[in-house]
Image (cartoon, rainbow, N blue to C red; front, side, top):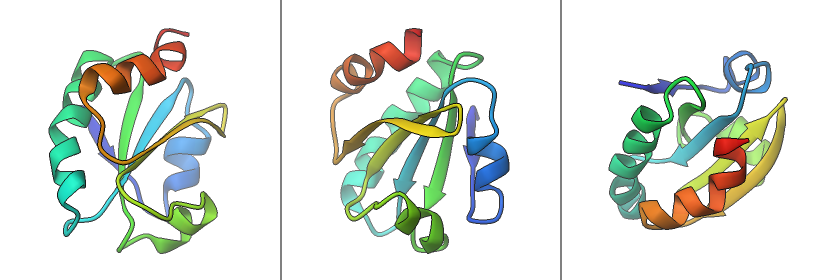
Length: 108
């Protein structure tokens, strides 16, 4: 699996101090759209392995980080580069649309 689980405890180390871009999937087990998005996030993680780190953060278990980045609805995907959020998508979106939205970050 190309995805990494992140928590409030390791978010700084895994995401903010990472070399290269990191896409964080803010999700919860009870969230239907999150479950629909999960296989797409997995595919992106595999296809961009080595170019993009993909991390998953369960908002129920890690409320501090979700609150710090104003995650009010899930699923929310935020791409971080050099410790800063550079792109944010809220809600379910087909893979093609996600890749299009994140293309600058993914290829840059």
